Every structure is written in structure tokens, then in C-alpha cells.
Length: 253
Image (cartoon, one colour):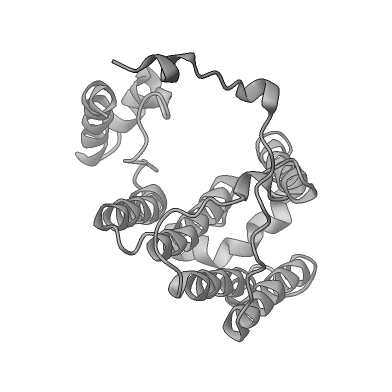
């Protein structure tokens, strides 16, 4: 039982409001981090040039744009967190420009939302960007890239790069290391590479990490018929996998 003094204590946070915490001292950026930021900037610059120049749809264009961006970001995360105390660091983040309705947050929100709108409803405006990754699509599936391959490519890169950030932030926590490794493995292997490789062998493009409700049409009669009528036993296994994931994995997870 709590004492009467504690029970009588009244503190109305909504009326008093939340004051902004004291500003944290600025964090100095090392020369290694500066170099990584330069690499990221060069990657974005190359990406813009590639979109309008002759490097579009070439391996050189991919490496000099997406490669530099991912490498620079990964190196930045490595050095930014290497000498810090591992663990959660949320001081002041709700008052930062990216998370407190600042210009960075608005810019990111509009950009990401706009990208999804164009991806779903006006994909023709992304055609040149999509064909940037044609060499990779040809290598994996034997065909040119479409908007969903391009989206999967970007999503997978984001998972891998920010996975490195998670490794550095929670390098003291075995659970977080295993959890992050699992997410990276399943995204890269089963949600990106395997479906594309299946296409190169004239097999259905099947995502083993998707099931109801994320992939609600896997048990539709048309989908089941398409998979079971496909030559070989793999299609039947895919139907079994979709059913097991829906009726077993979904309730359990």
C-alpha cells in the first residue's frame, strides 16, 4: 500500500507541459566520419548524373552511386558509434529537426511518401531509375528490372546498411546482434535473392517470407492453381508453405 502523501501528490503533465531538455554539447566529427560523408555525397551526386547520363544501367553506375552511398553510410555508422558507450541513446531526439516537425522531418516525410505514391500509381516516372539496376536484375533473374525489383533492391540495401548501425549501437547485446542478423539474412536471402533466382530457373516468383495477411492472395484459388499446375513439385511445396505460414506461423507469431 502507498502512503497518503504519495496518493495525494498531484502532477498534471498536460497542464504543466514538457520543457525542452538542456541542449547537449555538440559532438565533434572525426576526419574518418567526414570522409564517409564525402563518399555519401559523391554517391548521391553520381546517382543524379547516372540518371541523366550514359552510366544508367551499367555496373559502374551501380557501384559509383548505390555502392558509394552504402559504403559511406556504413563507414560513418561504424566510426560514429565505435567509441561510444553501447546501448540506447535517446537524449534530445524528440526535439531534433528530423523528429520534431522540423524541416528535415517534413522533407523526409514528403520525399518518402511521394516515392510510394509514384511507385504505386505513376510508375512510368520511375522507369529510368528502375533501369539503373538492370545489370543486377539480369544477373539474378535473367530479365530486366521492374519497379518491384527496384523497390526490393532499395529496401534490402536499407536493411543491410542500418543493420550495421544496429550492430554498432547494440554490440554489447547478444540478443540484438542475433535479431539484427536474422532480419538481414531473411531480407537478403528469402525476400530478395531467392525469388529472383527462382525466376531465372523458370519457377514462380515466390516470397517465402510473405504470408497472410501481408500476402493475402497466396491461398486464392487462382494462385493455388497456378502454383500446383507448374511443372515440378516446387509449386505444390509453395502452396503448402503458404498454408502452413498462414494457419500456423501467423497465429503463433
